[in-house]
Image 1 (cartoon, rainbow, N blue to C red):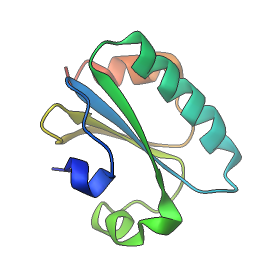
Image 2 (image 1 turned 180 degrees about the horizontal axis):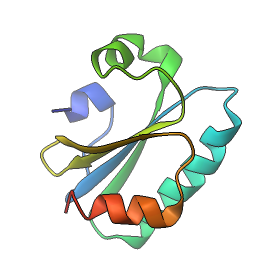
Image 3 (image 1 turned 60 degrees about the vertical axis):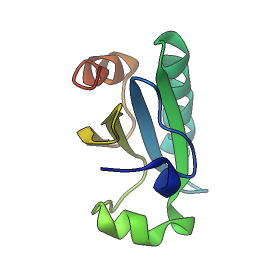
Image 4 (image 1 turned 90 degrees about the vertical axis):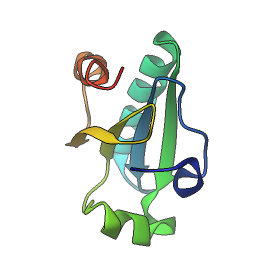
Length: 100
């Protein structure tokens, strides 16, 4: 389970899309756009982007070894889906179904 304190941002009311990114990651930019669009479309869904280099302990704890990695959290902060690489919008929307 992840908390708002660990993420540095509040959890979404229904679900949260957590993106681990790095500064020079080209797919991270596209992922940011897709997740922001989905969060704007689905009420109660938040989007949090975390700089991997600034949160190495959290990366180790969650066993994240590449960027972008996206976690879908339910309202309580439990990880219900996880994916590495640039996601398609349809896949993100489908993954949210497991969280809300």
